[in-house]
Image (cartoon, rainbow, N blue to C red; front, side):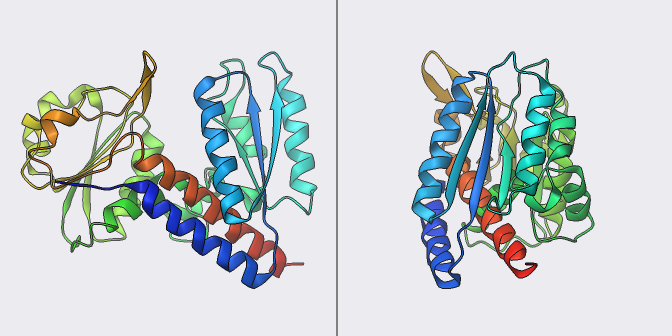
Length: 280
């Protein structure tokens, strides 16, 4: 079995971005908004900050307490939308329960939506339009493609909590001629036959040990997009020890999808900066 180490691939993407940014003599800048004190969110932001520095992308962090007023967050986003020095904006998720994630994301100008998760950008992506792709599915596709296998006609299973993610992921796979089925973690037992037939399994649940070796076929590509922290240790959705003797390829947690997602985010920031520079 081969581990798909996203960290290594992400490092190459960051080097390429740095080269392109220097060649075009532009200065992309990413604005990140953090609300509350979520430890995982703070960790992800540090990783994004470090990666941005490596790629030559400016990084500005705006912090709010969890008891902040939502209108203040929205006002900041509107100001950042108008700021010509800011190329891309993201709001670090998840937000505290009292905030409306949908309302806040919709406030971001679609032309500065670095995550590619604004409803307008999702709609464009599903229609095959627009240059900005949602970063999480894009990162997963890059990992699958890194196997260098012929993917055309393969069968994929997407196990996800989010219907929107499943829909976007299915579309990304379809563009590579990969057929897919979206499953909930709650109906995996009833769909054991489908799991056994899958050439590719993608998970984004956050439940340790969800996928076990007995559920998969020999040589399958597994992309573990789940992440959860328990007792100071980070886990994915895959029962690593039982899967290793059977799978052909597996993305580890940590070090798999995470670094790739950050690299794809910064790719979007670069693309947004280029488009904005062109429209000046």
